[in-house]
Image (cartoon, rainbow, N blue to C red; front, side):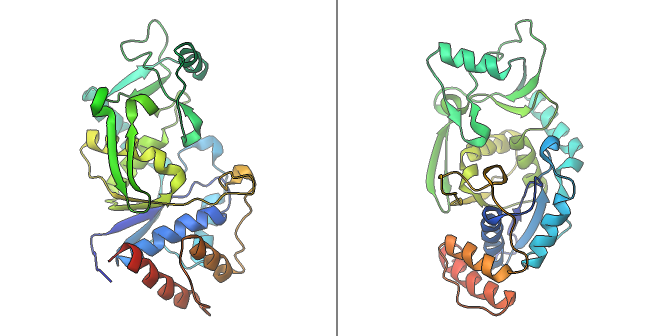
Length: 299
């Protein structure tokens, strides 16, 4: 097994409710990758979306992870406490000319795309691709949000190699458009927060669900504009329900059974393509599946 003392990974749940099986798969994958590289594994609570945050959920998530044998090597970080860092990053991007104010509503964006016979959506929250309406000014409208200006032409095409999914390519201009960094309701957008948090924590490897694969090109572009390092990425297949929807709290996912952690962990490991043997303890389970993960991803 390779030793990488500089390896720093993380699991970043949103406290919108208790952990469910889909969350466990992502947590286990990131935990195993850190163990296989003999690196550091951290926990970040992504409570940046205030209206969706459930009181008490952060503590419940940390308790559940502990019951399943997963502990942060350092004190967990809460996004809600990092306002200053996000504001500094936005100011840096604004000074460099990458950011502009936008006065468009979602309805106006949808109408603009309909009239142009172009309607792209990207997966994260099914957001409409932005048509560039306010790039050159607000046209008398009050500012509502702050957007990141993406390049034009070939410079907008960004490629990266995912450790699980292989080569990925996204045209930021055609598929996404200028994306939001600070929302109209004053909340910080996921894209900015995650990039700033990962950079400040020195994260070298990001392991998460494939539902976030679509966000990666935007995050890499932001990293380049902020002058920070780009981590290695690995996106694991997500769990879906009987309707083919991603398993989530919104689609009826139930909380993990904290009374049977080995049962839940064994099922999560199988979803990741691992073949855990019958284990009588968490220590034995992790020893077994970490060795299997290392053969696939760390050697």
